[in-house]
Length: 362
Ligand code: SF4
Image 1 (tube, rainbow, N blue to C red):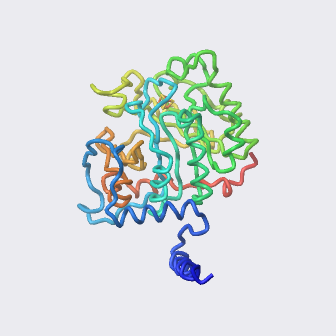
Image 2: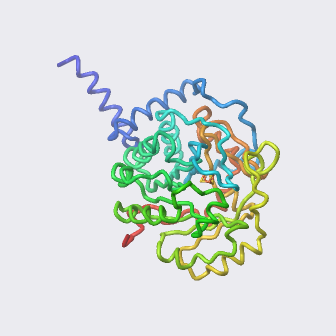
Image 3: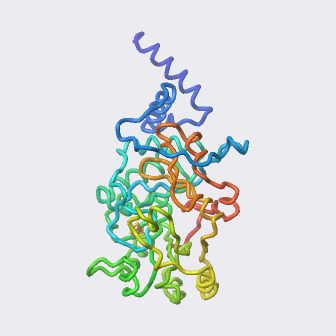
């Protein structure tokens, strides 16, 4: 019995220390990761051989301009670049097949939570492609159950999602956003969203029903380009009744969908600002529409993490990576992210994003 006394004392002391700091003592998994992360930080960090080569240095925020480092309130984690579609304007292409080991990804997510993250969005590539959605499901569950993030969301093309996934993981997911650029299947084929016999639009309706059944808020993302700019989508969007319909203007990113070493040539998809405005004008009565123009200031208002957990700086019209947060920590890496926190708040980046607060009638 006496041999246990020092252990009990140590646990009590640890508990007294960590609880006022709101550390994850109630959740053993998160506590273990937290301890591991703290030990790594104390020992100078350093990642195993999987570290990417040549993380480039971008403009630093926080040192040159004397501002404090930004808070990663809302983060988009593109954990895979693999995808089963071939959209002609894709701006996050399959340049690598790398995906972090699950425990490393969880460690990075914990670091982000400690740095102030409230919302995580998992994206790709196609996030359901890796391990048939199990990897994604485990991260979604970890973020909601262990990290207790107010908002956990996914952006997907929707083609690989099965009802079983909703059964297993739906309760941990706040928002599912499905990409849909057209309600005309021929246009989807032209864009590159064709999947043989599968119909992208029919699949969208099925996903809408599952979101209702499993209490997940449903969102639609559309990229407006040369092939859909004249379409009238009002009726279909009203029927699907998403909580948000995010409408993007087709964007050129050097090295992704434009330029010599890019895997796509999106130039033929590009539309003018006037054409984009025309599309918005036609749909101005759709209350859930959230427009996203290509203005540079808007581009800088997103925090994007790539498959190595490096922030991607889009300020120069391409994606320049920082060092990985797993190697240098969030505060150091975010200085190179090019993130404009003021613009993030100005564009309404912080909205009601937890399904508990959305008060939906599903
Ligand atoms: S579905 Fe998304 S990730 Fe896949 S090719 Fe299309 S735009 Fe790229």
